[in-house]
Amino acid sequence: MTGKTFNVVLVGYGHVGKAFYHLLREKRDFLAARYGLRPEPRAVFRSSGGAVPGFLPPGKDLGLEPGQRVNFPEVLTWHPELRLKTVLEDIEPGVLIECTPSNIRTGEPGLTHIRRALDSGWHVVTANKGPLVVDFKGLKDRAAQSGLALMFSCAAAAALPTLDVGMHSLAGAEILSLEGILNGTTNHILTRMNQGASYAEALREAQARGIAEPDPSLDVEGWDTAAKLLLITAAVMGTNLALKDIKVEGITNVSPEVLDEAGGQGRSLKLLGRVRREGGEFKAEVSVTALDRSHPLFGVDGTDKGISYSTDTMGTVTITGGNSDPRAAAAALLKDIINIFR
Ligand code: HSE
Image (cartoon, rainbow, N blue to C red; front, top):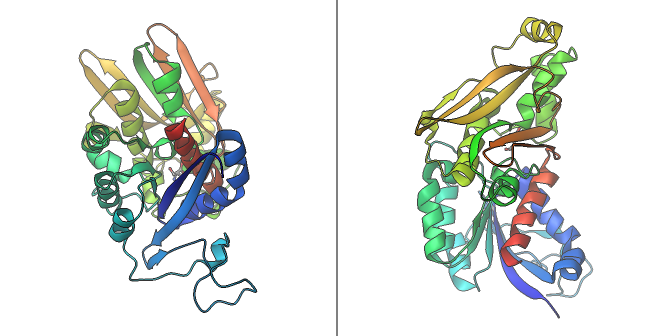
């Protein structure tokens, strides 16, 4: 067997966790052929226990030899007694994928998982925003001190490569300000309300696509955008903002009349996250903003997202698009894994 083989432990088996597990299986041959990488899923955890994939669970008869390797997620058998700590300490460190729900107030349970993984020598790739919102600097320092990667593209607008562009493509340029449509759920709701759908109907559609947060008030009240704004600016502008430093407004007060009025003026209402330097300080806010046609994010509709960086040497650089769905979020996790080993 050629290439690099490494262990993967997945924590959190909701929409994104499941999509990641499927994607790893789907891309197995491609990853080996294109990158020489062979990720081995060794354990999957959810709140009701852990599963060890890859081997036929005892007592199952699927027409396979006992112990024969299988890679079908449907044979995951959950053992309440399996502990993350034990797995992390017992097997060769690889990459921990953290996909438990984001709690942006406490960071838990992801914060504990990430600290434990880093302390046990595991790289971490997280979809979960909470731990980094609560302790960005602490976690980054912890990883750096051990020479480990802590990657979070998935938590920073997933398929939209906000961090890749901000950290690598714009290296050496000073980012003076940034503006982003960073939440697919609210952008979908605003777009659909513009087309005549009701708020409730549009929210249900976003939930059916698996993009709304388990608690959708985080989306519609602007907190998911604020969390992403915090993470992106920490990474690309070196800010050290807390959530309380960000003025946050959501879309819950946007009525069809307000949307019509903006439309009548040739403008489009967006939930925009913004950070700019003012003197020596950074001002950050999330607010419903009427964009006119000349704005680079004017045409970003539906579940699309976008970010526009304004720099001192490279001018304004805008990226838009990228799917907003669990598979695209899983793909952002996979991208980070590949980039750790490149
Ligand atoms: N709920 C988020 C969104 C997806 O609608 O964009 C996860 O960040």
